[in-house]
Length: 212
Image (cartoon, rainbow, N blue to C red; front, top):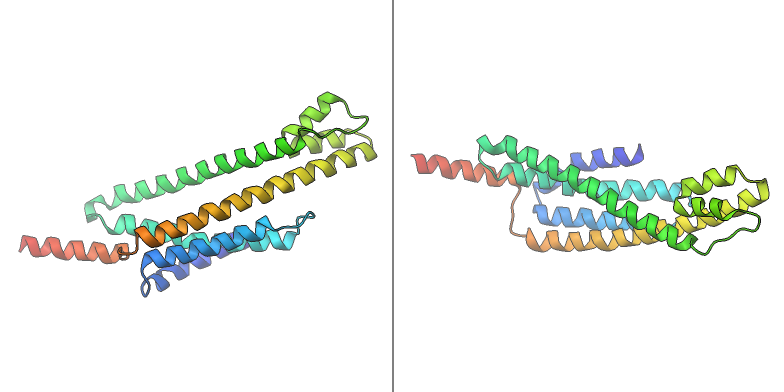
């Protein structure tokens, strides 16, 4: 809920800010803020503090909203009115595809790091088959730990959680770098681009003048 509220609030504020500041700089500032949110997640302690997780997710959601909002505005606002439907569909498809691709890539990264960290883990009294299941995913480790005696299950689960938190930290750090790069690209490549609605109005006026 905090993440969703932050995204909605930022989406509402973005048009107001973008009416005074070029979209490139609004997007770049938002992406830089998102990087700060990922940095909070990357610095979470071993106990995975809940407050830090909530704050980190809320901050990066607030920062990413301008990129989504203004990208759609730029796409739809720079085409002819009769092409607005196709442009909106393209923007939505790109957003959904990008989100799914990001989840798939980052999910693969965090799983790969987790498995690498768990590769050498061994718990006395736990069968090799059960260890292999625990090495696949954190969920697998939880399932195996629940079937073991208290002490053995606790030892295995502690090691699995430590490996997962390490993977989470490293993946969040990768996100910091990626989002900062996106902020730089947005500031440089879109610095001369005005808001999509403004561009659309200029195109309409130019078309009307040409017809006259």
